[in-house]
Length: 392
Ligand SMILES: C[S@@+](CC[C@H](N)C(=O)[O-])C[C@H]1O[C@@H](n2cnc3c(N)ncnc32)[C@H](O)[C@@H]1O
Image 1 (cartoon, rainbow, N blue to C red):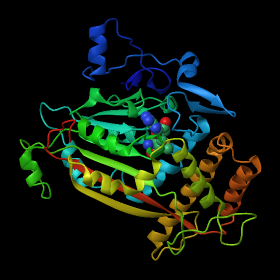
Image 2 (cartoon, rainbow, N blue to C red; image 1 turned 180 degrees about the horizontal axis):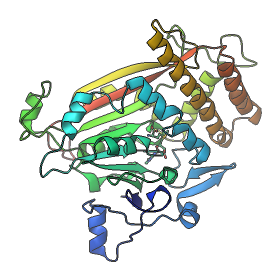
Image 3 (spheres, rainbow, N blue to C red; image 1 turned 30 degrees about the horizontal axis):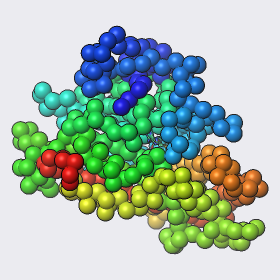
Image 4 (cartoon, rainbow, N blue to C red; image 1 turned 90 degrees about the horizontal axis):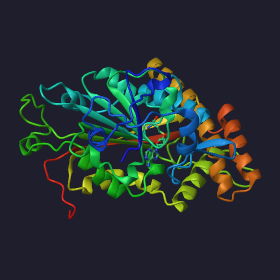
C-alpha cells in the first residue's frame, strides 16, 4: 500500500501536495484512489528525506527496498530525465511514448461514465507518466516509485500524481481499475516476476468475453469493454557487438575488441541476482506473460540501439537516428556504470577493478573503440476476461 503521495495541480516544487486525512474514513477513500487528488501525506524533503532515502558511499539511495541498489539522487535522475538520455532515447527509438499505438489509443479513448487510469510502476522522475498525462488529459495518471525522485520534475499536469510505494508489497487499492500499466527498466526491483505479472493483471480492467473474441480487429462498439494493457520494457544486459553477436568481456588489462562496459553490466546482473532480484527473468517475459492465464495478444518487439554514434545508417534519416540514439545511450551507459559503483564496492569488488569498469567504459565509449548495441525488449499483453482467483 502507498505511504506517500503528491499530485498535480499543487503549488510548490514538484507539485508537492498537502492533505493528510483527518480520520480513517478519509484515509480509506484516499487509499482506494477514489478522490480526485488522493494524497495521504505532505512530502517534506528535509524530514521525509530521512525516512525514504539513505546515504551510502556518498550517494543517496531509497530506504524502502534493498533489491533496488541504484542511487536515487540528482545524478541518477539526470540519466533518466526527459530532456536527457534514457527517456529521450526511447522516444526517438519508438517515435512516441508507447508501441501498439492504435490499441492504446482505443483503450484510452474517453467513454462517458468511465474513469480512464494509467499506472507507471517504477516511474523514476516520472517523464513517461507526465507525457501520458498531457496526451490523455481525461485520464488519471499515477506514477509509483520507492523514492521521491519525482520531486525534481516541476509543476505536474492536473491529472498526474505520484506515490511512494514498493510494488512488491502488492497493489490491492488498484485492482480492476487500470487501462494501461507501464513498467520500464524496473526488473532490478522485482522480487518475483511470476507473482508480479499476476499482481498487475489484477490491477488491469478485465476485458469482456466478446472483446476477447474480437481482440485482433478494431472494436468500435464502446459497449464492449476492452481489457487493459500491460507494457514491460527492459534492456538486455548481454551487450552485442557490431555483428549483433555477444560482445567479448574485458578481463585482466583488457584486449582490443573487449569491453569493460559489457563486463560491468554482466557483473552487475550477477550481483543483483545474489541480492535476491529476479532481474534475469526479464529475458523470458514473453514466456511468462504468455503462460499467465490472464493475458491474451501477448507480443514482444526488439530494438537494437547503438552505444555511441558509431553506426552508419543506410539512409540519411536512419543515419541521423542512429547518431542521436548512440549519443544518448553512450552518456546513459557512462552514468549507469558510475551509479553501479556503490553496488560493486558493497558486494566486495576491489576498488581498482571498479575503477577499471568506470574508466574503461568511459575510454571505449568516448573513443568509439568497441562498437556495441544494447537490445531493448518491449513486451505487451492485454488482460482477458478470466476472473482472477488465488488458486490459478
Ligand atoms: C531505472 S529507473 C527507471 C525509471 C523510469 N521507469 C524510466 O524508464 O525512466 C527504475 C525505477 O524503478 C524504481 N523501482 C525499483 N523497484 C521498485 C519497487 N519495488 N517499487 C517501486 N519502485 C521501484 C526505482 O526507484 C527507480 O526509480
